Length: 245
Image (cartoon, rainbow, N blue to C red; front, side, top):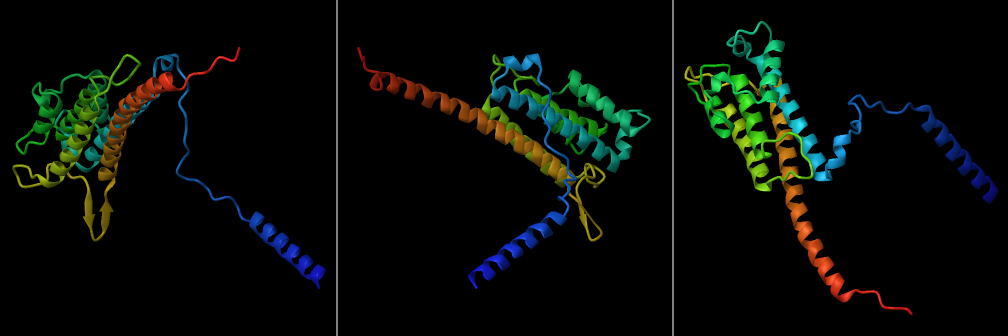
C-alpha cells in the first residue's frame, strides 16, 4: 500500500510539472531596466552625484513629454510662436531648456518668478512653453544651476524639497486657475463619463517623487557622515588591536 501511494504521489507531481512546463512564460510588454554605458566622467562621480544626474535627466525629459502632451490638447499655444508643427514647438522648448536661453514670453524672469508669470491668468504668450521652461529653470536652480554633478558639487536638500513643493503647487494652480476668458489655463487632466486621462498628473508625480527621494538621500548622506565620524572616533579610542609579540 505504501509503495502504491508513493508511486501515485510521484506520478501526480510529474504530471503537475509537465502541465506547468506547457505554459508559455508571461510576456513583459512594458520594457526592461537598462543601464547606461559607462563613461570616463563617472570616475569623478559619487553614487549620489550619479543619482542626481540621472534624476535631472529624467525630470527634464518628463517636462518635454509634458510639453508634447500639452501641445496636443492645446494646439493654439504652439501656433502663437509661429511654429509650423507641434514637433517644431517641442524642439524649440528643448533648445531653450538645454541652452538655458531666456524665453521671450517670460520677460526675462527666471525660476519661480517665471513660473508665477506663466501661471498668470493674463499671460498672452505660448503658455505651454512658458510653463514647461519655467519649471525646468526652477528645477535646475534648485540643483545649484547644474544638470550634471561631480564630487566637487554639493546639493542642498532643502532646495530640492522646496522644488518638489513648487511642482505640486504649479500642478494645482494649472488645474484650478482660470484664464481671463473663464477657461482653464491649459487643458490637461480630464475625467468625464467617456474618458479618464490622468497622464499629466502621473508624469508630474514622478518628477515630485524623484525630487523628494533625492532630497532624502542628500539628507541621509550628511547624517550618515556624522554618525560615521562618531563611530570612527569611538572605535579609535576603545577598540584597538593589542600587541602579540
